[in-house]
Length: 405
Image 1 (cartoon, rainbow, N blue to C red):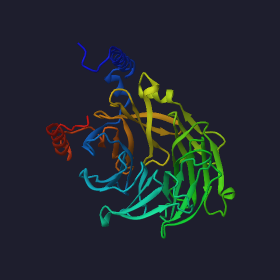
Image 2: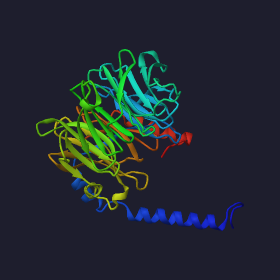
Image 3: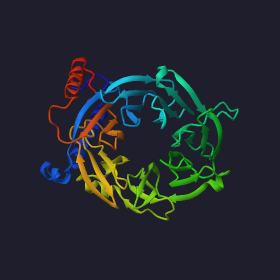
């Protein structure tokens, strides 16, 4: 007997949706059994602690850690940010004030008490953690009298902490890279001729304060020397990925400290030298799916890539959208080769953000269920310092009936 207000067509559609989900679940999964999987992913990692940053339907979209990764800033999908104490996995502060989605967060490279957050509301806010949750300063482009600020889709800070660059969405056929002096919040100027679509990433070189790379959905990675007096002279190299750029980052490659990795929106991984005409190497989504030992490449995606304690290596974090997103695996990228590293057992969500400490191997992940997870290298001993916290957190979820998983 149908419930009141439910039509036979609704029931038909629901049945077909359920059948589709079952078919997808049957289709996707590992191509081998757990024993063979463990033979491929040989580096042990274990889930040390997990906490619910939010019990609402809130995603953890972006994160960044201070030097040493003792504190973490996380951008949430509800337009707020939170600060976490990593050793104790406890929330220290909530930062609210943006009127649009937060597009990125970052600690100051010189002062761990200063945190920056950019937003599509057109502002980059500075938060001084010593002064509580009030915004300490604000950066924006209000030089036009239209009353509308340019939506900021990305930003970064130079390694000496003096200069900040923010990238915008495409506005009336113009896409901007804007620059501010962090000592005065003064807008210094901008570039608007090098990209033709939304800027997705801006990354200053980790040791060269004047070198900046930007990535865009127009498929270009542009490299600038911002010391030059105009945009044409500043643009040193333009790399065509022939795709849409999602993430970029600098790393060391074969005696060259000016190499870049690129993750595309089609889930490919590329590595470039800054003056290259084509990638040093490229791994497709199908390649990565095969290495992940998964059936469906359509479900596989790259979360992020992180530099490791070995200058020429990258840690590649990959996941799957199948099921609840439980599949989470890491790889080492070295000398044009990808090697399976760790199978992160116990993940409960589709992971969208990560942070990695290259000194001790700690990995933090966050995702669509609002869970912050701390992973440690080595097998689980059952005596880890955060085991009790992990158990008490789960019990609290169960009692309050607000479990996000």
